[in-house]
Length: 119
Image (cartoon, rainbow, N blue to C red; front, top):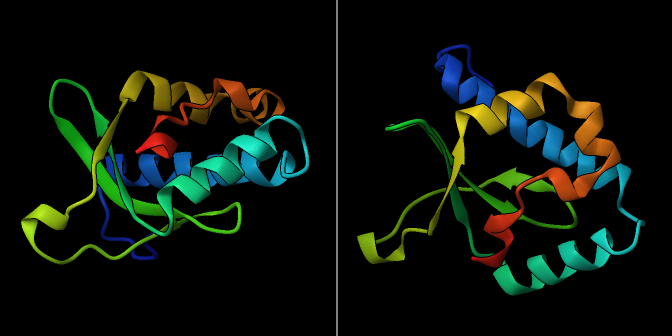
């Protein structure tokens, strides 16, 4: 996502999480039923963006992403307030587990919270 060194540790954690999600997508691109789920999610989003927020009691970091060609990528925000994407909230506890155990999630993509695909 961001390539600068001026980001917060929480923002960096969120970016690392999305990198692992992309590794999950790449490693399981041809694996049924995940490939069908991601294709359906991509079709449902139709190029729209989704905001993902890392939260405890308060939001700690967020980003706007889209799913394209079985890859999660950063997306630009903009437009009127009514045009803002829906926010999927991910707990720091969950993110920390993904970061500590990426191979577990790559091996079993059902453990990743793909709730934002339904937005």
